[in-house]
Length: 302
Image (cartoon, rainbow, N blue to C red; front, side, top):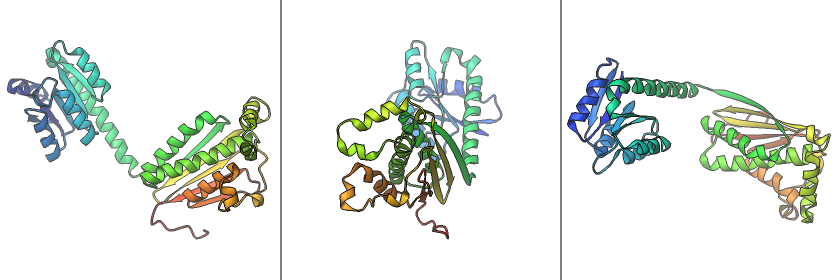
């Protein structure tokens, strides 16, 4: 049974809408006389869908929509519009309404619109419920050496990490910074073979060499491979470039005061500070970043 809350300051309109919806035996109808009462009823028993009038005293349909979006974001809202309020319907859709029905077409369209919105909403909720049972996820990416893709890639990886509860909102930002440093290292220092020491010169040679090699073979043909594994206990990011690598033993100590102020020591410092583990392969063209959920035990090999 789906519970539908009908909100209208007119008792006649409420009963008319309720009567149309009541023709479906799978729907239970509840009523509220204004937006404030609707919020109280939602607090007491969250509905599966809200059908609300647009023009109501004290709290109109748009205000109710905004409050519901904030407090009950999973509850879809259908706006019932009167003649002359078509522009308001467009605004409501832009601000999050699931659909609208003109009052003059209620008898013809209301049942169909409600059925469509309920089906879409319930499919999403079922998907969310299935995702809560997901215990492990692996993502694999192959990116060209294009810095413009880095932010979008990080956002996707952060979203999956949050979905698994592997890190908090605060850690999300720190993980994002560590990922950005590692991805830029793979693109610029790995595939394009541009030394970070050029940044210390502050003469523009660093960006000039990047711009040159982005369009030049063999550098422009190299890709960055990312394998991300997510679980409720930890996330692991393996980032590999196709460059020649570097001597890992020559990696500068990021905690040395002399290196903190240098561009080529900054990324290592940030990665090691924000992640629980940072390790490189022997050839130096692959880095593994590990972030464990607070309280999760470290693996035995660590």
